Length: 334
Figure (cartoon, rainbow, N blue to C red):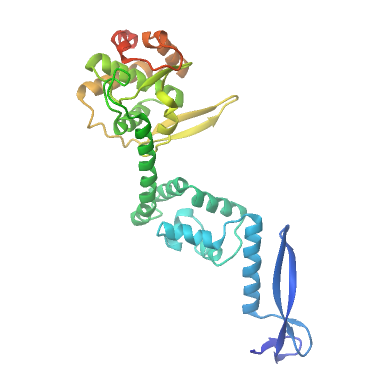
């Protein structure tokens, strides 16, 4: 065994190890054994760097587990999953240069940093959003952003596949004789949101149904291929799949505002819509509907949908047939 310096004796001395149990750390009950170097000459405790570092590693590891903190292994696994270096992830998070390095070596993170680490490990969508914001500010390179975006796009694609699987059906009078087209749906929602200041979760159902039924009236098929059912506030996308649809965020994003008795969800365009696949006559219908509705409140739009024959003649929660598009009152309103 190597000798170490004893301040009391003033010389390098031989030492032995004694054990001590740490029962508590930062209010958390523990059972961690620490090694203490004891001078063979004077029996005083003496400091030995390697021993103390090992003690701290065991202490921090046990504390993190008991306190529910993210562990160094979890951080490294997450970072390697996305092929991110410490420098790249640090830049995305906006932390100090050595912060992540210390956490991966075992240092205990503060509460705020732990919550952020938990979020990016459990929610890849959140990590992608952080990377997107950092990239937009010019604080990370495109190469770094693309590493996260690749996973993000994969998640987006999986969600789209789920939506398509649940909404795709053979062309019939219930979907306007058109197969469901999720790409057109995404782009038209983004386009509507770019023109409307108050496009909510409730009103987007009405905009889409009016657009689809108006296009069926004018051009003999719907635009999106969606089916709508009668609900209390007007036509609603079948199966309440609007909840999944508005969670897509390649073309648009949502914000929430807590009201007295409900949460208002508003849809905002990212202004990256592509309307090149829409026929001129389809664009004319879309613009006409937007122009008629954009200055109306959500309540007024719902009330207008109640005036349509399709809503009046259909049982609650039943599919509204596109056959009622023939006498769409919206198209006759000035």
